[in-house]
Amino acid sequence: MSAADTDPRPETPAGAGPEAGSEALRVLHRVFGYDSFRGSQQEIIDHVVAGGDALVLMPTGGGKSLCYQIPALVRKGVGVVVSPLIALMQDQVDALRALGVRAGFLNSTQDLDERRLVEAEFLAGELDLLYLAPERLRVESTVRLLERGTISLFAIDEAHCVAQWGHDFRPDYLALSALHERWPDVPRIALTATATEATHAEIASRLRLQDARHFVASFDRPNIQYRIAPKNDPKRQLLHLLRAEHAGDAGIVYCLSRASVEKTAEFLVKNGVEALPYHAGLDPRTRAANQARFLREEGMVMVATIAFGMGIDKPDVRFVAHLDLPKSVEGYYQETGRAGRDGLPSTAWLAYGLQDVVQQRKMIDTSEGDDAHRRRLGAHVDAMLALCETVECRRVQLLAYFGEKSGPCGNCDTCLTPAESWDGTVPAQKLLSTVVRLKRERNQKFGAGQITDILLGKKTAKVIQFDHDALSVFGIGTELREAEWRSVARQLLAQGLIAVEGDYGTLVLTEDSAEVLGGRRSVMLRREPEKAAVAKPARAEKKGRAVPVDLPDEAVPVFESLRAWRAATAKEQGVPAYVVFHDATLREIAVRAPATLAELGTVSGVGENKLAKYGEQILETLGTE
Image 1 (tube, rainbow, N blue to C red):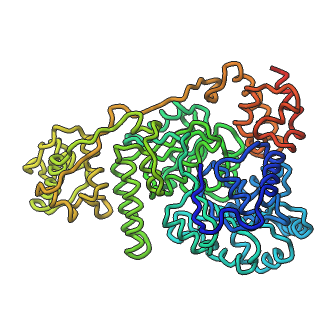
Image 2: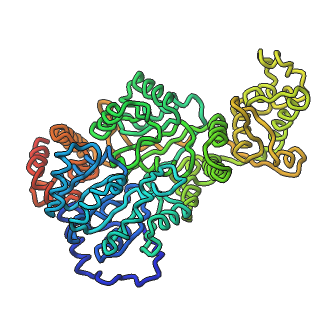
Image 3: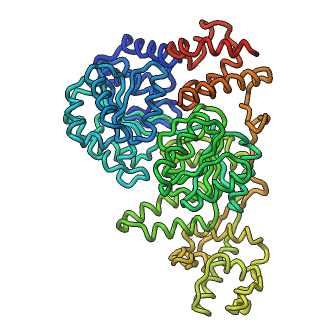
């Protein structure tokens, strides 16, 4: 992972040097248990430690949090972290406290006594990090509190929330530009896991970070396998995916509507999958309880609308599935990025069909905002459709959306089972001609289903009722199957050669349709492979639980014992399992089988505090093998 530095100033800012860097490295090892930084982490950390402002674009799982946590531990004072994730602040603080970091938060979930205690700790210099929701900074008493303390830095997490037309826009983020005015000498670091070039520029402008150093890491997540399948009974398709590849794994399933969330979660539970629903229509207590179970219990599947997910720091999410077309590539990237934060193989799977295109177009037509806003929404959907319909590498297309060039990845469905492109001009003309005949001869408009029946020559009750078997186009499309005609209609919609209209999703011509009908424009279409690509990880099942890949056979029972110990410890402490240790750390312990505390202390992810807290218990667990 490399940083693209857009700041014209000297590479090493005043005050930075090897001493600051070595102190940051000591903190990394002592507190977090790691021996070296990844990618551009050290460059970012050294810059902020020296007092410089930074705007950081780094993918989920890339280690963004260390970029402000370590400077806060090295610099004098308290690091103030602005985060929109009130529901997750307790877990974030618990994770830091488990490392021996003095952390606290102030938000609306606390009572007066709890807030006063944290405020007193802040003023006494007894905190290293203080988490705040952005709306707290609009409260004058909070501002006065901060002015009375010593602040080491401001970290603005999830900085894309400042983008006014973004999918996670938060109005309170607009006021954060005032931080620099009140505290001009305190460095600011804004961070996000996803941003197009336009969103990047908007973040810099709205937060007044144009003169900051900009660090843009690669958006590639090579451990995630991207797959997009034609929609055909999506709940059944999802169940097959989970049973065949992700039995017992934690994962997230995204649906567009609340009703779909409820039905899908119920379907999975009935079929033996531990699943929970999450959407804005549930009462807050139920949402909080379901989120807590997902974070704290292993192997849980969360079925949710996009209301769920931002800031979910669960490293062992093995799959993210979409049962409906996402509204934008940016949203899709951010949602799929919640899989595989630990760097282990993970799946991003999407079921996509004609009705998704119709639904998205209708939502745009009825959306609030002016014509320019609707055009922006349309452009987002068009980019998402292009990703779905591409015959090229999915990852190449995905990274290109963020301005990053790459070569074929060899680990997506189009690389593993390449799709063919074929000349669909004649089928396109037949479908468009059917739309024309219905309008001209019957003054009627119908959806893709009826048009497909006409082309296939099906004498359904509806065809007979409207005398459609008398049309000259009746039965002229028998060279294609029904699923293939649905694919033709979907791709013509994606290419803007037909459009949908009204509440019933009827098909109508566009300005470009005449070019095709007149033979002046050819139409290339994607032909779906006979069998969707499935690259199964080498895993075995044990009591319904998935066993991690790449573990030697002799290490598997050791890993399972360690995971059982972790689960019991996490339950006793009331924290998510990953707060105790990540899977990657347990895997390394299982493989290396350290016999002493000193040996255990050399394992990645075992810092001083965790070694002192859990070391003897781990050695005892290993000794039982």
